Image 1 (spheres, helix red, strand yellow):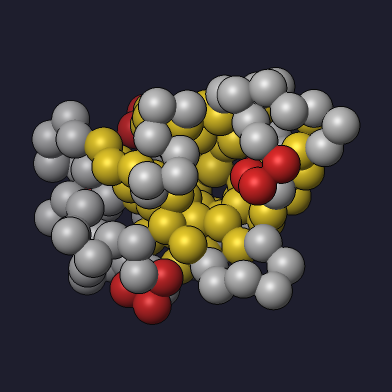
Image 2 (spheres, one colour):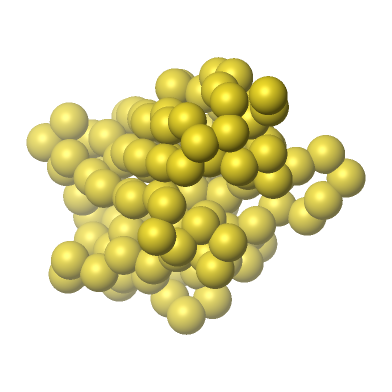
Length: 130
């Protein structure tokens, strides 16, 4: 059974940092690209970062470039999202996601489309507020 479990969310002040963790089970995480998405209240789910499984490439949404870093440890079946210089607009529920077909050959140009991911975690809340 495919399962993704996120953790590491919390409440921080603007300028603070958090590291999100996504642990996969039921499949070999190293065989798929992995993405992080987020959804704020009243807003659409948006792609935050994607890390390839076939090369060293990473991709980021424009709003987080230079502040967020995605990484993976295939031996631990885990993907991470390091978030620095957090802003109030980063407040959202964060999800990790993948797809057994569309994410098998790296991050597609359309990776930010949440409809392309079939497997999702339950999400972890990140709140940035002073």
